[in-house]
Image (tube, rainbow, N blue to C red; front, side, top):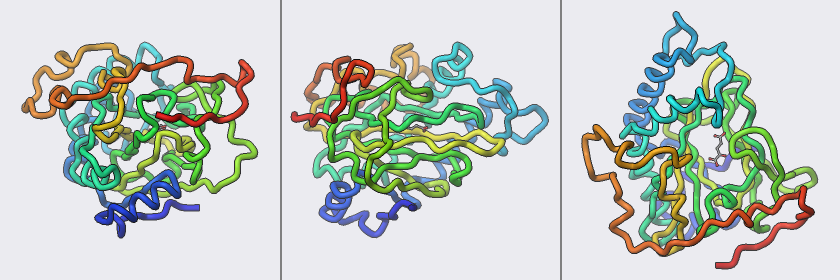
Amino acid sequence: MTYTNSYDLLHDAVALRERAERDGYLFFTGLVDATALWALRRRFEAMLERHRWIDEGTAPAELLTTKDAVVEGMPEFIPVLEEFQRLEEFHALAHDPGVTGMLGRLFGDTVLVHPRNIGRIVFPTTPTTPPHQDYVHIQGTPDVWTAWIPLGDCPRALGGIRVLVGSHREGVYPVQRMSGAGGVGVRTEGMSGDWVEGDLAAGDALFFHSQTIHEGLPNTTDRFRLSVDYRYQAISKPVTEASLLPHFNRFAWDWVYEGWQSSELQYYWREFDLQLAPFSRDVYRFVEDGATRPVSVDL
Ligand SMILES: O=C(O)CCC(=O)C(=O)O
């Protein structure tokens, strides 16, 4: 099944909340500023060419690669991670007005944009992201929503994200170690519900609740899949300190911000009186340790 496009509900807060509650995800065509998105995409292309991840002699815009996959956690990933994490455009896109406007209506509150922004560079041979719920990695409140935004057109063959509709309602499932981003996943065999997926065009955005089970589709092409995932919550809900640090917490914000044109999006969360919550490893309940059922998170 394909995603339901919620563009017709964009300005209707009540309808957005009803659909979000029912499905655990929202999909919109043409939501994100395409000019900003393509500008960021060009920066990624140039970076991947410079690091020789793109096949030599091919146009960077084609994103062609026959190179061995470099994945998160490998030492070779670090220089590239550092480079895109220092891009002002990479962080600025998280504040896209179409995205934050929709989420403001959904939350009925001021939106806290988590500064821990994530970029994905998926080779054709990168292991796909296993089925998982973001909550275990984020915590604070279950009412965190992820925006998953491809940097350019993303037909299914390039490896997008599929979502198990309504899976956010059962609570937080036990996890087990799996390959792919995040390193842990949820066993979905025997789960009821429909999986939805789709071909995204540049500017489309997929949103899901932190308890919604989702997974990566295989990239069956000969090109990179480039995407970003950003996270958001109502300002009045608890947030963990880890969500306010750079992804992987390998470097300081001051270093990320060196050379930025504007200070507006630097340390912007410090102006809010945030309710900080602890991050607990106990939230990861392992199947290997005998955990079998989902548990609800009451905050
Ligand atoms: O892009 C991917 O493969 C992983 C994205 C994801 O799981 C997320 O945004 O939570």
